[in-house]
Image (cartoon, rainbow, N blue to C red; front, side, top):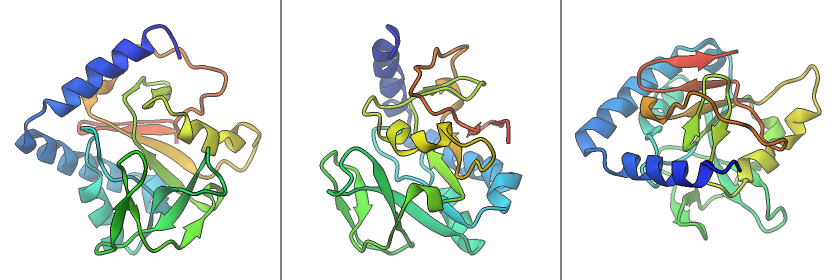
Length: 195
């Protein structure tokens, strides 16, 4: 983490939480429209996302679009046999959820797959830059989970796409050696992409 990561996290998290509900809903709808027509989404079948917490932009309108298109949707889950990495559980509209130790909802019914079995992953983030660098919440779960992408030279699935509000964009984020870069970032105004 750079010296500026901690104060930046606090500032942006506070900004996210202070947005009025009508604005967060409008941004989530616009983000869904921007992301769902992207070629990477259209050609993917197994897509992971998250359920918004801590003021994160809400991917639920995007998930509705994915379900309507016949895509399989997965959510990250914590599992005891892999405590520092995420696995992914199949998620449908009306599935029961329970809170994990961080207060994040996860599917109760666990049809689990490994991260490498996914085509596309929509990741939460606190800050990003146009080069695909992200600052997460600080736990390192996504970087540890997708570290295997550093070793791949040809097969680059899953693709990682961050979801954020446009105001979370920074001019430049200095990555750490263990950071896994994003392939694209979708906001309510555009998609920054290298896909």
